[in-house]
Amino acid sequence: MPDTITITDNRTGKKYEIPVHDGMISATDLRQIKTSEEDFGLGSYDPGFMNTAACTSRVTYIDGDKGILRYRGYPIEELAEKSTYLETAYLVLYGELPTKAQLDDWTYNITHHSILHENIKKFIDGFHHDAHPMSILISTVAALSTFYSEAKNIFDPESRQKQTYRLVAKMPTIAAFAYRHSIGMPFAYPDNDLSYTGNFLNMLFKMTELKYQPHPVLERALDVLFILHADHEQNISTNVMRGIGSAHSDPYCSVAGAAAALYGPLHGGANEQVLRMLNEIGHKDKVPGFIQKVKAGEGRLMGFGHRVYKNYDPRAKIIKKVAYEVFDVKGRNPLLEIALELEKIALEDEYFVKRKLYPNVDFYSGLIYQSMGLPIDMFPVLFAIARTIGWIAHWQEMLLDPEQKNKIARPRQIYKGAQKRPYVPLSQRK
Image (cartoon, rainbow, N blue to C red; front, side, top):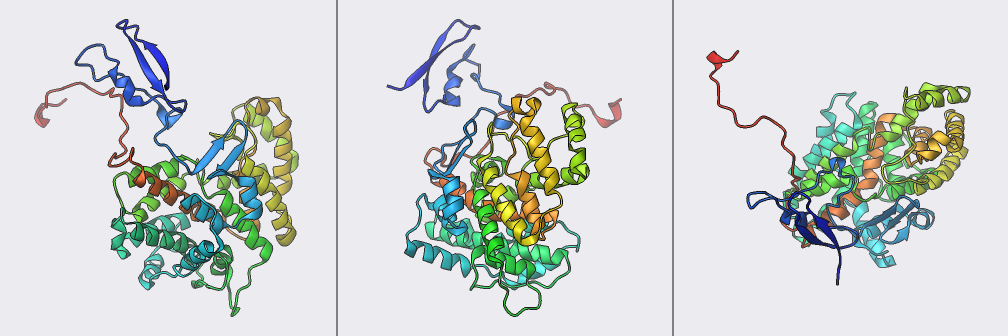
């Protein structure tokens, strides 16, 4: 027998017994609570979805209070240490770690779908030289919809599989082409002999050499960063992916919408804000003064705190270790001393400890990307590459969920505008 709660409506004196499943009540069960027959029924008001579940999912588990992040049950720490991005991507999508044969087939198909149609290259060339790479990425992913019309067959498993290969494979190519376009460099084409992240570095940085060889430390660092960003439950971009997907839009348009949400500074642009903050501080001796300003409400401490985590972000611990490995190869980032001093003071100051403001994944990722030679504008683009598999996994999960079937996302509202008014002709308006 399911757990229940009893609600007493003090307006009418009536009592209602509401079932509780997985610590939740069904919002539609509240509809039976009415003051009259004409009453639509009770609803709930939750700006920002602070306490509302819009779906069930088996992809990612987060316990923010304990600092736990797991993909399909596997701790993020183990995946970051032992897995690769493509293996983790397979896990996120299909729910199980692949066998060697499955991984070989998955890797082959991703590798051999990385090339872009020449007309897509012309499309990218049409952007102004100083266009933001993220805007180019969003527009180009949406444009792929016009090249693969069969993608509209979203309930055909074979078609979904092919679009998944294409999206995961082509995102790094689009991202690299957007970067090369922004710096006026010719495009570097994919190299099928390289790994997923090694090939991405090739398309970013290849110059005149016949064969680009990525540095193994940088290649692995990027792989770990991509693993850490592969999915993160029902964040805004995933929510947008599910929302657009609920209208049965094709996956390219859905991913473009998700990437547009990621573009926002409160989501995928957060690590950019960290670097701007560190540059603004300028020197580690100025950190105490900056901290005092933040406490006085005169500034924001970027890279600390998280909507979900009320403990140390588990990804931040992993990424800090990766940062030092990258610095050993590329040299110590001059902003590191400021970051370390900022972290030290914030973790000891009662003001931040009381508010559970711990470093999050964005605090060190920007320093790594910058040390690898990537401009700030590319940071959300890198995030989008990694997160594509998470978006697709949630999109597919939604399409195949019988509880979500044919239910287009449409939250209710509380209308507070004007009531019925007569139309006034233009000549009579004052």
